[in-house]
Image 1 (cartoon, rainbow, N blue to C red):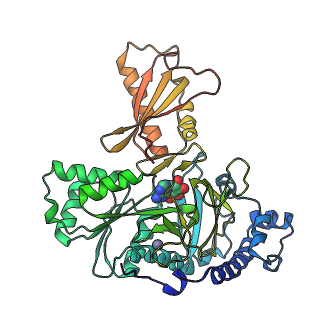
Image 2: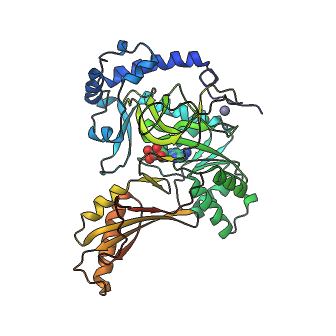
Image 3: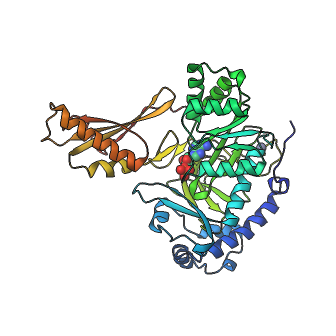
Length: 437
Ligand code: AMP
Ligand code: ZN
């Protein structure tokens, strides 16, 4: 196979050169970090008050980890390290308390991010002759604009279709000869099922490739999508705190995701001890961004579980590969690509006066998509045999939840004391989706 590189110099750089480059970039990031109140205090506490206090990459270990809660504590501008007037965009992800973590980008940051995404796309074999339909949510979520810009950078014809509405997606694919799509793996499976339902002939489409990410999926699921749609599927990993897509991506070998080490320093640690795991063992991925001046984030605990491959890749890229993500070290659920912490649900329903003491979050597969049901006990003084007020309560819970978590849940009301009470730590989540990763 011949491999194509978007930026050959950087993608195939020798490991020692890569390390020297990382050190230079890390020092820059330390310089920016020191301009934020959070890192100024954190870094000074460990004796780092200037970039020159970082002499080697191993000095990174002196810096404490950063968590999602740290980022929230600085909302809205606490992690901004450049002049507000030099920021040209923000993205955000929502979290447990409803306070989003917000990431700012300068013009150069957007350029850097775009070139990492372009590198990922080009590395799968795409080029300017491709027509790219970006079937993912646009907006604060980074997958929309991130891939959009990367696709344009490669020179592809980009169709900003957004997610949902399969009938319209098929029309666009047929009208413009789409050759590559980006979506969550569950949406790709949904698209395939709808194609059958609507009698769309696969041969009427020019589809060759898909980029699939934003949620965990197994090698079996990848193969299933590839066979059903007769395309190549490439795994795309990213998170808003680290720009979004463009952190790690599969090359044409489709055997692990190259994590771009000229943009990120990656560590894998034991989530309990926070000590590095031996090479090749599974642990929590910790990332330091090297390519963003407006919001530097050092040693971020992603909570994503993965392991490094220990052998080099046949494609010639020198950047280490990670295994597909196998789970999380916290309780975050990913429902059709949308992140959700159980505590977000608790906060909303417990503020509703008709709600009793117990609730249960049920996640299951309905066809190929995820389905969220929230089972809620009502207060003891509410009569279960009068359906009119009950329907109103149900609708109120559903609407309030949807407004807060952006997922439309099914709501079930139960009599006080009807939901199972576990001995010991309450079990609030029943996730019956197959775990085949
Ligand atoms: P967000 O910040 O909303 O983009 O969500 C980022 C999170 O989505 C990551 O921390 C992962 O938990 C998950 N995620 C993104 N891409 C993948 C992928 N390819 N495989 C598994 N999980 C993913
Ligand atoms: Zn490779």
